[in-house]
Length: 553
Image 1 (spheres, helix red, strand yellow):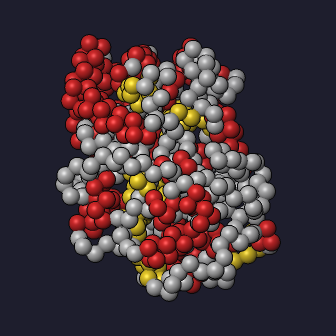
Image 2: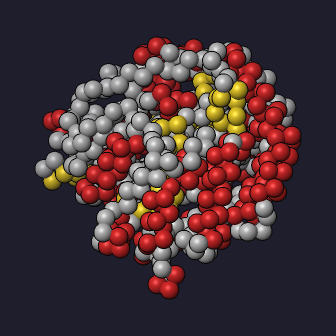
Image 3: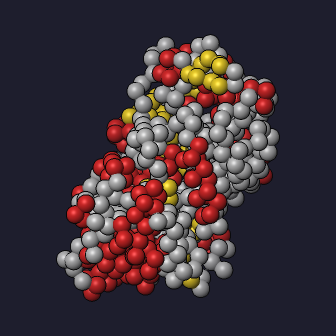
């Protein structure tokens, strides 16, 4: 990661709807009340190429190497002499750049010396509207319904608004002619963003924003390798279904209030770790192409095997009994205190600096149920993307230049300024070590400039957490060739945007089955009803787009 983990919801909490199948339809959780024109957008037949990936190879040598998938590790910040320049000149024209972004920090002071300093670096005046996460949906709806949009608006990948394709088409700039394919090379730092991150900003076939990138890995099975090794003699390394079942049995002791695994509850149903167990059994990442035909995960035998296995583990007592009502924060507490030894979360959880002293977190490397190759569902690879209000070509190119600066890679002079501000005001030096001042702590990250966009994240931290960085890197190396894509990522289905009720009904039936209140016949009936209500229509709409791309062969 580029910075210490900011306060706010975990990635697993935010993507809970995806695990339950909503995002598998290609919509994600919707921000209530947000919409474009109210009518469905026409399905695009003009599919823009994603921006070319042109990695920047300059900069300090990492302690552990990375690539376009694996994050490099830097145990210490690079020396000032090792920093390189990634941007020439100042892209701004001296005007104002306004933006609307989410925040999970206390607001910075009104007289913001950091934003003033950064504005000087790019020759613009930043006007950032910071919106708390718990009110983002309502304020987004109010803002987009009005006629006075800011220059830049952050769309959250994990929670796109209802009708977002038509909203983007009506009010925001199609950036395809500026960024598609090799055109992005005009902006080298943007070209350094991995292709997988750009996919989340290609909506209904067109590129509508610049992403805030994240690693491509989806959910991971976080664990307590220290306690598991103490109980079993080795850190967890199951190779198949039988190994994992045996591990769960060996570490569970209800009398000692210790359980192998837990999930969590929520407004969208119970999350039993579907992304993890489903990948073990070969369930597709939402959809898959089978002989040229799109098949949803619910339609597969592997999905039935997955929920049946979860039911088996729960019946055996290996899941924490409070799973249906657990909050994510409580699940994290159980993991930290050893009540639970495995829990599905996002990869950033491995770098938690708030853990009690002596607590060790790791992650189970994916495995196949029959001992074959494991799988990890590729995520959206971005936290969100920044859309541009419609404007003339000159204005759009200026804004792209400013975002090119903000996307400066780790090890560059620009990155250092973005992350630390001005020496003597926002940070001080002790040799090559840098420490933020009080002014820096209250303005640099709380100002939200990194939410507009940033460079590819690396594994580093101002607090030395070498072992946590090493473990995250080792897991990524072991898993990098196991990523499973969703073939409909970035496509648009009007029916999928209205699928929430049918999907929720199906998920309720699945949960009832796992809890022993329904049988498999009820599940199969619910799947059939879901297909009739929305699934078959969604399939047809996605298929038409895949045919235009020539992607079904």
